[in-house]
Length: 344
Image (cartoon, rainbow, N blue to C red):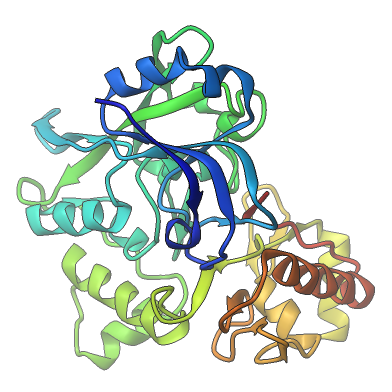
């Protein structure tokens, strides 16, 4: 049965902990709930926003419309071939809990994406990635409902048009589809000896070496990623934040060489097309923002890329801080940082 609340605080529905209100909040626990919602007057006449875990959003004011809270649940796994397994997971499931379940079963491919906050439905929208791995490497298909008609459609990976933190659902099809389930093609490490864990990115190899792990399993990699993330990132339950606020910028070779000449120590990752990715956190830190606090918000002391709510901050205050950071980085490096967080 579809449940719709009126005049609801969203403080517990976003990891920044911003205390704004929504005119309506609809809880979607089944596709039937969603179909029923499509025929209600609030849905037809008001602005609407689909909300998962609230871990990638910044509210700068009340939402005078209807929040569609994704609470779809369910998980299935079936053998795909001799070495792979197909995982079908409902979009309202918690992403990290899915990763932990797959690791416990010996299903490899997403262990580097451990502890990323949010729901499964947001994963293909953002093409989430971390520690050298992106969802695009394991995504098979996305199931979604067209909001204008209530019809179900299956998108192939190619049709999702995945890019760096991008997908068709963020642009051409924004607000047109509700993702209902995601299908992942993972390696069953119990049935093959050819799976190779990805340990080259960030501090994973260093962490494993410190533990004496020479031949890591997917569980070892997952544990390493969790430990590294916990050491750098604040827990949203203790300190409001939405993880990485900005995308890591990608620049051309000429621009990179200019920065390299001024900053020989600049960390960088050369891309297959000859461009270079530079950590946004490094750029922000060079501009003196790491650990800096302005009122009730600031850049976190352990990770400059994470903007935090120390308590009582408004979304506007956090947005203004982000704009100040963008301006100083652009002035110093001629790079305009792009938010990874969705701002409303």
